[in-house]
Length: 246
Image (cartoon, rainbow, N blue to C red):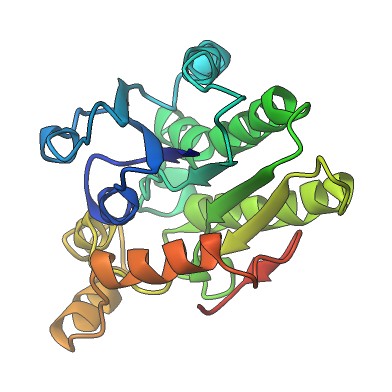
């Protein structure tokens, strides 16, 4: 049995990744703030466990991971994977206009939660000498900077550096967890919709997102999920790498 822990599965890319992974030989642990009944309906013999959980609640993540790992049978585990996909894009404004609460949520969901999940994943899987991989979904916003997105870009840049550092820590031993950060490209998701529909008086870059949409430059979540899943399970998953293009 291959086990997959996936965050942000209520819609968009996370839902598409989960849909690609539904398989009789796979067991999925899906995490999102809102329950995804369409995804749950695809469960085969109870091979999807769903956790309605807000990753902004960082102090409760350890309890969540304990619950998940209590459902994993080490004797049956061929491989275990963690996909840190959940993200929030707001605040979409210049930094002095951003509310402290929104800034904290952005950093909690986009950076702190993946760090805690990674820490716990490595700790709980340490005794297992099987394939163990963590895929961190980052963003080209690390390099392509836009006015009004300082928090999002900073969090994703932090995620890339974190992935590199943990890769160095883990190395290539038999019990090592491989960690990779990936820029998935420009995807037609709710984050893109939120950005292009934002108030231009506070988010001047909204027009850029609108043009990208109008010109048909957005890739479907399904097409991106296919590439990500192939990469996650493939031979080119190199320890500590940051993949800027799939």
